[in-house]
Length: 217
Length: 136
Image (tube, rainbow over all chains, first blue to last red; front, side, top):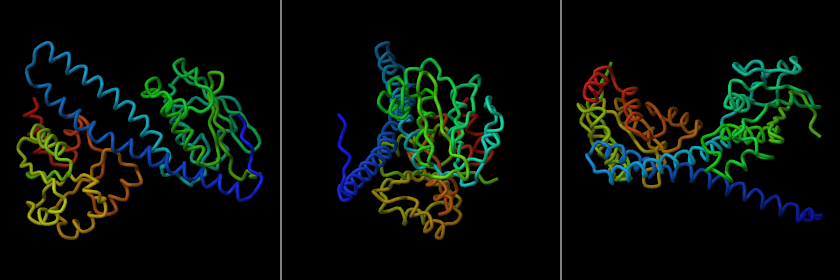
C-alpha cells in the first residue's frame, strides 16, 4: 500500500516527529538488548564453565552441552544486535581520507584514481565490511556524480540478501548472526549517518561514498 | 611492577558477583577477593579497601552510572586501580570512563579465559606467574 504524502506542513512535522520517536525507541531497544540481556547471559556462561569441572553422568553431560550450545547461540545473536547498536553510536573521524589511505588488505579495482579521492565521510566501517567479506573479495570502484561507488560480490551465504543488510540481519538473526552480514549492517548504519548508503542487490553489495565538496541537492 | 594482592568485585547483581568471585579464585588464587553487592555501602567500603587493591566495578550500580562515581573514588583513593566493567561498553563510554579516572574500562568477559586475560593485563608479573602455575 502506498501511503499518501502529507500535503500540509503540520502533517509533515507530525510525521517527522513520529519518525524521530521511533528512531529513539529503536536506539533504546538495541541498547537494552545489547546490555541488559547480555548480563545474565554472562553469568550463565561463566557458571556453566565452572560446572564443567564437576563429574557428571552421561545425561548430565548431554544437558550441559545443550545448555552450552544454546548459550553460544544466544551470544552470537546478541553480538549481532550489539554490532548494529554500536554502529549507531560509533565515534567517527572527521578527517577527510581517501579509500587508499585506509584500505590495506582490500583489493581495489576499476578506476584506480577514485581510491585517491578524499571522501566526505569516515569510510572505515565500509572497509571493515569489505575485509569481513573475505581476503579474496575484489572491490570495484566506479564514480557517480558526488560519489565513489564501491562494490563487491557477496559470499554465497549472503547472496540472497536484497536491499538493506541491516534489515536482513535483524530480521533473521538465526541465519545471519556470526556472518559478515554483521559487518555489512554496521557499515550500512555508519554510512547512512554520514550521507552515504549501502545496498545489496543481485548477490552484490554496493556502497555509495560521498566525496568531499560534493553539492547537496 | 605492582601486583594485586587484593581484588574487590563491585556488582549489585549478586549472582554475577559470586560467580566472578569463584572465577577469580581460579585465575588469581593467591589474591584476596572481596565482593561488594550493596552500592549504598560502596563509599565506606572502598575507603577501607587495602592499599593498591584492584577494584572491578560494574558500570550500572543500583540504577547509578558507575562512571559518575569514578572522580570521587579517584580523589579519595588514588592508589586503587578501578576497572569499570559493563556487559556492553561503547567506545565513547569507555573513553569517558578513562577520562573520569578509571584505570581501565572494558566489557565483562564471558569465559574463564577472558577473565584470566583481563586480570593478567591489570596485575603484575608475580600474579600472572601464580595464576599460570595454578591453572596448569
